[in-house]
Length: 509
Image (cartoon, rainbow, N blue to C red):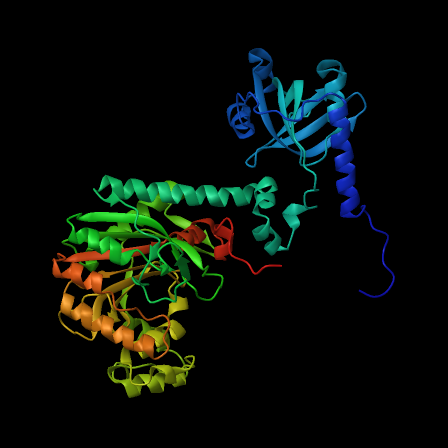
């Protein structure tokens, strides 16, 4: 930074910290107990506001409710022998009126030594001030914890979103909107559990450390078990374990799981993320599409109170039935009015035609997929059509080539009975009829292993134990995974996955 520097409007942070430590020292010297183990809370601040926010001054004078609550100091206004505090519990704020002749000299000295961010408890009568603000007239004031570092100034206008991710505790402390996001996330998970439990699904937990990375095409994280001297992978998906349970006779099973994929980071991707994965015996992909519509409509209605939710400048309508498109139709529709020329069904019938279309529409490095019709079609879809699927849309008929765990279509073996749900241009769910032929599964594992040997680190390894499990018989089964993080993004109108993960992975400072 060059040129003359302006006079700082505040002391440097180290001086602010020294001042706060000095206030703490004086609080201790005054005889205040700074090591309380508990505080007798009769109501949270948000509870007080919810219960008495609609009461008039006359109502409060008649009923004279007395409460004991606690929170963080977010504002302080001194007025000689009296003053005001604004306390927050992260959801709501409540004003506290402190008078020296009511609380006594030691408590009033404590009030004078408080800094923004300190934690205090207050016991007193709920009333309204002359200006009509809901307040507590303090009878006692109790010190609970010192905030030795100043809270970020003008937090609500702060543009440094990375600071919010790195120090989420500060974000939650002073930004009720952020807390509401994570309360919504918790409500989504509760609603999903209720929906599946009511339909006879069993919730389970499967291993997070795998000897073979499988269940999804993704690059895994590696770890090492010292006692067994064993290389292990953090799971990329629980799929193969959940299907083992169906082999064992659990006809409906689900897990809300944490997965780990050693891939890039973007507004839609975090290396660890949460998914719902569920399986149902005697069902096919179409059955799960209908179940998914029903589940999401119920979850959204319960969490948002409406089947139409805001997204950016528009609205998402969660009312079933959702649109349905094959991958080939989606590509044709997306390019029909494009000046570069529609991708025709004839082009999609051959690898050469798909390669020409991929080059024409600027697919990234299409030569990687030369001769591979399925991968070229999928890359074309991602390039030309994916972003345009804003309203809930099921995409189905996926190439078998990119669906190593899916059952082939009875009418066309080049395609699998697989679907994905897209909303706001994002993949939200992935489901399919499960491959239950052990010989076919073994052959696909071998193909994947060859891809891996040629440098594709996302390809699956050969899982002999899973093939053996299939040899004991997997009944016709359909399974699906739904991304909890992305679903939360949609229901909170947040456009980065980091906004809905409490502690997203960040590069060290």
